[in-house]
Length: 123
Image (cartoon, rainbow, N blue to C red; front, side, top):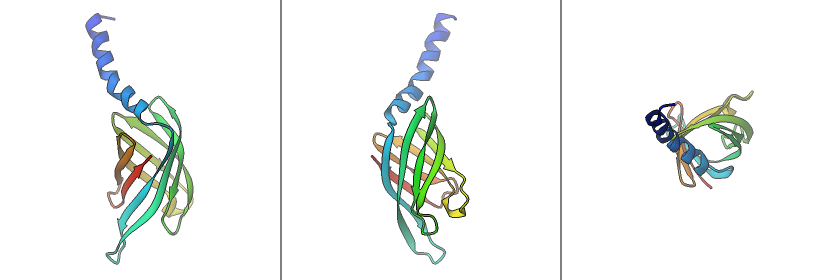
């Protein structure tokens, strides 16, 4: 490989590796906030437990605090740069989720894919 190409490849790989290292396995706890059809803002407890990080792949369980769910749901996801995308399909409709989160130190913040649920977690 040409030295310039090798150096460029190294520079491009650094942000992904640095962020993947910053995202540590463990339990991230916080809240999900959403607006009900009545217009009332609801805040439910939620956790994201990262059990395994393999390259850019992430696996674990999420506790979904919606009243119709309230259970741990296995998820899988991917980290690219400072963006962590996680999701799960579940037999109960309210237990399925897809979150697009930003990793910032020990904090994970973002929204559901629909944009209707805000998620704020910290370790």
